[in-house]
Amino acid sequence: SAVEFGLDAPYRVEYHDSIGSTNDRARELAASADRDEVVVLADEQTGSRGRLDREWTAPSGGIWASLLLAPERPPAHVPLFTLAAAVATTSACREAGVDARIKWPNDVLVPGSTVDDATAGTGRESAGERGRGGAKLAGILTEMEGEADRVSWLVVGIGVNANVARESLPVGATSLRAETGDVDRRVFVQRLLERFHELREAPESVLPAWREYSATLGRRVRVETPGGVVEGEAVDVTFPGALIVRTPDGERTVHAGDCEHLRTA
Ligand code: BTN
Image 1 (cartoon, rainbow, N blue to C red):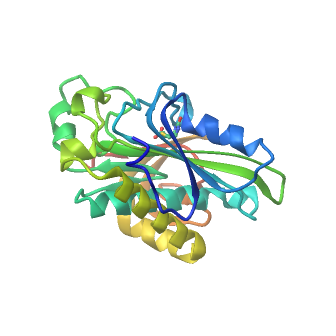
Image 2 (cartoon, rainbow, N blue to C red):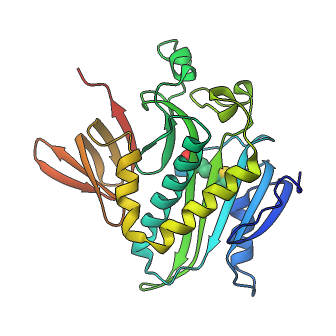
């Protein structure tokens, strides 16, 4: 309910019981004259979107949030905001008692989830989730528009499978309810926003915090990039959010792509 989301947040909050997509609503606000930073929250989304044109299931009980931001930064720095959102989300999940980690760039996974065990090798894994190194608890979809030197608007969409029953989630996904039990969504969002705000004020702390929560560094990975597949060991993350992969041909810096964790032989 709206009361449950009566936030005392560092951002103005707009709440909807049900909406198509909070990212679409935030983009609509970006086009309006009022240029305040806003957080759009919904209990349920009927047309939510995931990364790489994937669908995203957003039933009632989850945390579906879009942050409309207007940073005085060049578009090239935007990945750092996405990483910061992943860190803030992971930190809130950990405070809720779940061993959450980040798969590059910004998927929040529970590596030892029983949900993952239950589907592994049964043939029920969806192609999109197979071999991804854990059950997916949260995801982030960042969208922006900008000139060469300045972002005009930035929407960071955060989806957390919070108080959602396992049965209502896609195969390969998990929820806070399935892992540990229901959370107070108001408290969760409050913590997430506070952590995000802290990281924004200390951008130099984003990469160290991301490294600490990483599920990817030290793993063998296969990344499908717009320029082809890169396979090797993920060795580090570098400004503004690129992954460094050690391959037989040397180190490659990957700026965008779909990352899969490979099992080590
Ligand atoms: C992913 O593919 O992992 C990203 C999922 C992002 C989902 C969130 S839920 C709030 C916001 N509104 C949307 O339509 N998508 C994002």
